[in-house]
Length: 216
Image 1: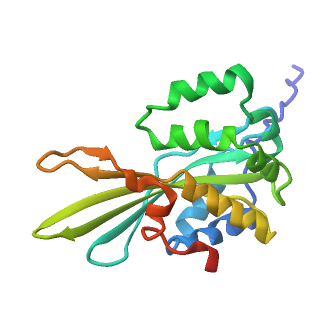
Image 2: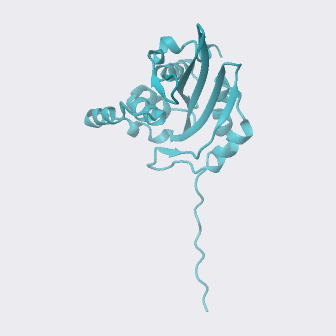
Image 3: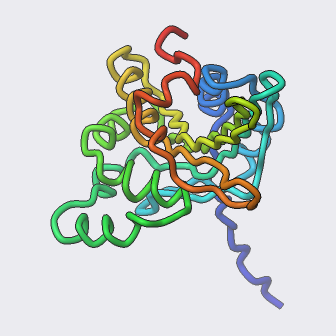
Protein backbone atom coordinates (compact mmCIF):
# COMPACT_ATOMS: atom_id res chain seq x y z
CA UNK A 1 0.00 0.00 0.00
CA UNK A 2 1.46 3.27 -1.09
CA UNK A 3 1.84 5.78 1.74
CA UNK A 4 0.05 9.07 1.63
CA UNK A 5 2.24 12.14 0.98
CA UNK A 6 3.12 14.03 4.13
CA UNK A 7 1.74 17.53 4.13
CA UNK A 8 3.86 20.20 5.71
CA UNK A 9 2.15 22.33 8.30
CA UNK A 10 2.94 26.01 8.08
CA UNK A 11 3.74 27.43 11.49
CA UNK A 12 2.06 30.65 12.52
CA UNK A 13 4.46 33.60 12.22
CA UNK A 14 5.89 34.89 15.47
CA UNK A 15 7.58 38.11 16.46
CA UNK A 16 11.33 37.60 16.89
CA UNK A 17 13.04 37.97 20.28
CA UNK A 18 15.20 40.92 19.23
CA UNK A 19 12.24 43.07 18.17
CA UNK A 20 10.24 42.00 21.23
CA UNK A 21 13.11 43.14 23.46
CA UNK A 22 13.30 46.52 21.69
CA UNK A 23 9.56 47.12 22.08
CA UNK A 24 9.51 46.07 25.74
CA UNK A 25 12.46 48.35 26.51
CA UNK A 26 10.32 51.33 25.45
CA UNK A 27 7.86 50.58 28.27
CA UNK A 28 10.45 51.84 30.75
CA UNK A 29 9.56 55.42 29.90
CA UNK A 30 6.17 54.84 31.54
CA UNK A 31 6.79 52.23 34.23
CA UNK A 32 9.11 49.33 35.14
CA UNK A 33 8.43 46.39 32.81
CA UNK A 34 8.17 42.71 33.73
CA UNK A 35 10.41 41.78 30.84
CA UNK A 36 10.20 37.98 30.92
CA UNK A 37 6.39 37.87 31.15
CA UNK A 38 5.92 40.39 28.34
CA UNK A 39 8.48 38.71 26.12
CA UNK A 40 6.73 35.37 26.60
CA UNK A 41 3.40 36.98 25.69
CA UNK A 42 4.69 38.64 22.52
CA UNK A 43 6.58 35.60 21.29
CA UNK A 44 3.66 33.23 21.89
CA UNK A 45 0.98 35.06 19.90
CA UNK A 46 0.46 34.90 16.15
CA UNK A 47 1.89 37.93 14.40
CA UNK A 48 -0.28 39.62 11.73
CA UNK A 49 1.12 39.02 8.24
CA UNK A 50 0.01 39.48 4.65
CA UNK A 51 -3.07 41.68 4.46
CA UNK A 52 -3.75 41.57 8.20
CA UNK A 53 -2.96 44.96 9.76
CA UNK A 54 -3.59 44.06 13.40
CA UNK A 55 -3.75 41.18 15.87
CA UNK A 56 -5.44 41.67 19.25
CA UNK A 57 -3.58 40.25 22.23
CA UNK A 58 -5.09 38.10 25.01
CA UNK A 59 -5.92 39.77 28.31
CA UNK A 60 -2.84 40.83 30.27
CA UNK A 61 -2.07 43.40 32.95
CA UNK A 62 0.92 44.73 34.82
CA UNK A 63 0.46 47.06 37.78
CA UNK A 64 2.89 49.49 39.36
CA UNK A 65 2.26 51.50 42.55
CA UNK A 66 4.07 54.82 42.28
CA UNK A 67 3.09 56.18 45.70
CA UNK A 68 0.22 56.29 48.18
CA UNK A 69 -1.99 58.19 45.74
CA UNK A 70 -1.08 56.84 42.28
CA UNK A 71 -1.37 53.42 40.68
CA UNK A 72 -0.45 52.66 37.07
CA UNK A 73 -1.84 49.65 35.18
CA UNK A 74 -0.54 48.65 31.76
CA UNK A 75 -2.32 46.35 29.30
CA UNK A 76 -0.78 45.38 25.96
CA UNK A 77 -3.73 45.18 23.58
CA UNK A 78 -2.65 44.90 19.95
CA UNK A 79 0.22 43.97 17.65
CA UNK A 80 0.31 46.12 14.50
CA UNK A 81 1.71 45.04 11.13
CA UNK A 82 3.87 48.00 10.04
CA UNK A 83 3.95 46.75 6.45
CA UNK A 84 0.19 47.32 6.12
CA UNK A 85 -0.13 50.68 7.84
CA UNK A 86 -0.46 52.84 4.72
CA UNK A 87 -3.56 50.84 3.76
CA UNK A 88 -4.90 51.22 7.31
CA UNK A 89 -5.48 54.97 6.92
CA UNK A 90 -9.07 56.21 6.94
CA UNK A 91 -9.99 58.92 4.44
CA UNK A 92 -13.06 60.42 2.82
CA UNK A 93 -16.47 59.00 3.68
CA UNK A 94 -14.94 56.14 5.70
CA UNK A 95 -13.17 58.65 7.92
CA UNK A 96 -16.41 60.53 8.61
CA UNK A 97 -18.38 57.35 9.27
CA UNK A 98 -15.73 56.03 11.63
CA UNK A 99 -15.56 59.36 13.47
CA UNK A 100 -19.27 59.37 14.28
CA UNK A 101 -19.30 55.64 15.02
CA UNK A 102 -16.62 55.92 17.71
CA UNK A 103 -16.88 59.55 18.86
CA UNK A 104 -19.00 58.62 21.88
CA UNK A 105 -17.44 55.21 22.53
CA UNK A 106 -16.46 54.55 26.13
CA UNK A 107 -13.89 51.94 25.06
CA UNK A 108 -10.40 53.53 25.12
CA UNK A 109 -8.94 50.92 22.75
CA UNK A 110 -11.54 51.68 20.06
CA UNK A 111 -10.89 55.40 20.38
CA UNK A 112 -7.09 55.04 20.27
CA UNK A 113 -7.16 52.81 17.18
CA UNK A 114 -10.08 54.16 15.16
CA UNK A 115 -9.96 57.87 16.07
CA UNK A 116 -6.23 58.05 16.72
CA UNK A 117 -3.95 55.73 14.79
CA UNK A 118 -6.13 55.22 11.70
CA UNK A 119 -6.74 58.96 11.24
CA UNK A 120 -3.12 60.05 11.64
CA UNK A 121 -1.45 59.83 8.22
CA UNK A 122 1.93 61.00 9.52
CA UNK A 123 1.98 58.37 12.24
CA UNK A 124 1.04 55.60 9.79
CA UNK A 125 3.79 56.66 7.38
CA UNK A 126 6.23 56.55 10.29
CA UNK A 127 5.13 53.02 11.15
CA UNK A 128 5.35 51.91 7.52
CA UNK A 129 9.00 53.07 7.43
CA UNK A 130 9.89 51.73 10.91
CA UNK A 131 12.96 49.60 11.52
CA UNK A 132 10.94 46.49 12.30
CA UNK A 133 7.87 44.64 11.02
CA UNK A 134 5.67 45.20 14.08
CA UNK A 135 4.58 47.85 16.53
CA UNK A 136 2.77 47.44 19.81
CA UNK A 137 -0.20 49.29 21.28
CA UNK A 138 -0.77 49.36 25.01
CA UNK A 139 -3.20 51.18 27.28
CA UNK A 140 -1.90 52.85 30.42
CA UNK A 141 -4.50 53.43 33.13
CA UNK A 142 -3.40 55.85 35.82
CA UNK A 143 -5.53 56.15 38.96
CA UNK A 144 -4.88 59.12 41.19
CA UNK A 145 -6.37 60.25 44.49
CA UNK A 146 -6.20 64.01 45.02
CA UNK A 147 -7.27 65.78 48.15
CA UNK A 148 -9.39 68.89 47.92
CA UNK A 149 -10.43 70.44 51.19
CA UNK A 150 -11.82 67.55 53.23
CA UNK A 151 -12.61 65.32 50.26
CA UNK A 152 -10.68 62.83 48.13
CA UNK A 153 -11.19 63.05 44.39
CA UNK A 154 -10.50 59.95 42.29
CA UNK A 155 -9.15 60.67 38.80
CA UNK A 156 -8.58 58.03 36.13
CA UNK A 157 -6.56 58.66 32.99
CA UNK A 158 -6.30 56.39 29.94
CA UNK A 159 -3.27 56.94 27.73
CA UNK A 160 -2.27 55.06 24.58
CA UNK A 161 1.24 53.67 24.71
CA UNK A 162 2.64 53.29 21.18
CA UNK A 163 5.78 51.21 20.93
CA UNK A 164 7.19 51.70 17.43
CA UNK A 165 10.72 50.63 16.44
CA UNK A 166 12.01 54.06 15.43
CA UNK A 167 15.24 55.77 16.42
CA UNK A 168 14.99 59.34 15.12
CA UNK A 169 14.31 61.79 17.95
CA UNK A 170 11.70 63.66 15.87
CA UNK A 171 9.72 60.47 15.40
CA UNK A 172 9.94 59.62 19.09
CA UNK A 173 8.80 63.15 20.00
CA UNK A 174 5.81 62.85 17.65
CA UNK A 175 4.79 59.51 19.21
CA UNK A 176 4.91 61.02 22.71
CA UNK A 177 2.85 64.00 21.53
CA UNK A 178 0.32 61.60 19.97
CA UNK A 179 -0.01 59.77 23.30
CA UNK A 180 -0.63 63.01 25.18
CA UNK A 181 -3.16 64.34 22.66
CA UNK A 182 -5.24 61.19 22.89
CA UNK A 183 -5.20 60.81 26.68
CA UNK A 184 -8.70 60.45 28.16
CA UNK A 185 -9.41 61.87 31.61
CA UNK A 186 -12.27 60.86 33.90
CA UNK A 187 -13.32 61.66 37.45
CA UNK A 188 -15.32 59.44 39.79
CA UNK A 189 -18.89 60.51 40.54
CA UNK A 190 -19.28 60.83 44.34
CA UNK A 191 -21.13 57.94 46.01
CA UNK A 192 -21.36 56.02 42.71
CA UNK A 193 -19.02 53.44 41.11
CA UNK A 194 -19.05 55.49 37.88
CA UNK A 195 -16.70 57.93 36.17
CA UNK A 196 -17.55 60.93 34.03
CA UNK A 197 -15.35 62.67 31.49
CA UNK A 198 -13.35 65.59 32.78
CA UNK A 199 -11.83 68.59 31.03
CA UNK A 200 -8.49 67.50 32.48
CA UNK A 201 -8.18 65.09 29.55
CA UNK A 202 -6.69 67.93 27.50
CA UNK A 203 -2.91 67.73 26.87
CA UNK A 204 -2.09 70.73 29.04
CA UNK A 205 -4.06 69.42 31.97
CA UNK A 206 -2.58 65.93 31.85
CA UNK A 207 1.04 67.02 31.63
CA UNK A 208 1.30 66.69 35.39
CA UNK A 209 -0.30 63.25 35.39
CA UNK A 210 2.25 61.39 33.31
CA UNK A 211 6.06 61.42 33.51
CA UNK A 212 7.91 63.89 31.32
CA UNK A 213 8.70 61.32 28.66
CA UNK A 214 10.62 63.72 26.46
CA UNK A 215 13.49 63.81 28.92
CA UNK A 216 13.91 60.03 29.15
